[in-house]
Amino acid sequence: MKIRIYFCKEPDAGLLMKGRVSSQALGTIYDLVWESEFKNLITIGKLWLKLDGAPAPFGIALKEKRSHDTIAPGDIIEMGKEFYMVMEVGVKKIELA
Image (cartoon, rainbow, N blue to C red):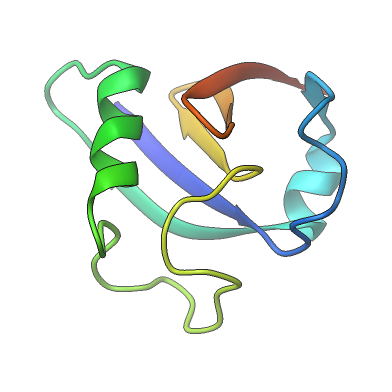
């Protein structure tokens, strides 16, 4: 299963309340910072806990310029064909419009 992490460039974008993000916003407001493939089945909750608790969970950066170092509210986790937005506590499934 392919996992991608997108960091939000603009933390006050107001996207946290909406349950939908456009594919254009994913390309402009968000930066792809990490991509990996897991052979074992993993749940989104376990993945969020691993990313939230680790000091540097992403290893080598795909891009050198990042808006922040750890996962924060407003960031997006793509797991397979599903998208999840990171909230203060946990994640929320969103639609890609």
